[in-house]
Amino acid sequence: MIYDRIENIETYTALSERLAKGLRLLRTTDFSALEAGKYEVDGTALYYMLQSYQSKELNDRPEAHRKYIDIQYILEGEEQIGVGALSEMAEEVSANPEGDIWFYRGPVTNIKMGKGNFAVFFPQDAHAPGIATGDPAPVRKVVVKILI
Image 1: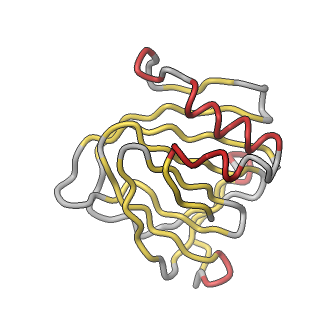
Image 2 (image 1 turned 180 degrees about the vertical axis):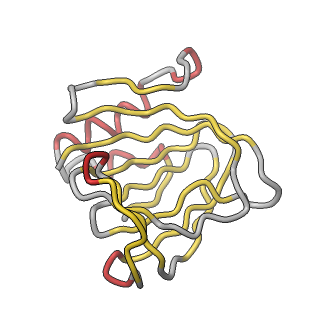
């Protein structure tokens, strides 16, 4: 997992060409002009989802992906994301292999994500996004999906 601020993305661009493209996309795209939805950049190899939702009091089902790396970037609002090692998850609750998402139960530590923060989740990282930092509140976020 990587957790940082948008102004530091160049630190991570040497890790892979696609990751670099995904990170730079966050800095160069005017998301304010776009509606919530899915946007392809390089077909299924690199795309992003623009999301607007209400944070919730609890997310006790961490998720993980096997085919994609997630970059989650907060545009407006704030939330907590529970993060934990996939190897420490106690049980698999449900799976949707076609959608590349598996849900688990297990220990997580919450990190606070505010405007300008991003986190990169690799297949070994379970994550439970959308948790309110206080009362549930609006969040606008970009999730970049990078095919491994």
